[in-house]
Length: 198
Image (cartoon, rainbow, N blue to C red; front, side):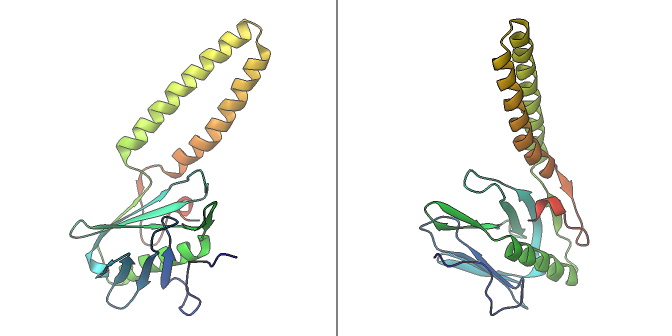
């Protein structure tokens, strides 16, 4: 049975977190210490003071192997960036969710930053331009499906019309859910966006 990479049972909840971004790569390890956010990715490591963290972006990023995948992009004052994912590769066919450990770590990180009075930007969802492009794409797909549905009904292709309705429902459920969760917004330390945490 594969060993779970997540939170160490020897540390208080939310103080340590680790995940594997790929099957063959080294684990990405993070720890909240007095000095700041300690991180190690392969041979690279460092400690970012909580006051030096300039921005956090939380987003929902599903992939084919894991539909419940969340992401935190953390940027410091020098514009360096690290990424924390809520899933970890375990085997060739298994990307395991680490919902509880991820939520606990991200929540505790925000608490530590609030305690030192940081002025970091807290951003939720994807960028406004990418979001607008996604909305336009959804609208174009909706228009195309509506046109095909009208044509199928007019020519008596009821099986084709039924397929289009099913496809539209599935597409709307998957892509619509992604767009709704990733709506661009800002948030505060007291109100982390629930839809962007597992």
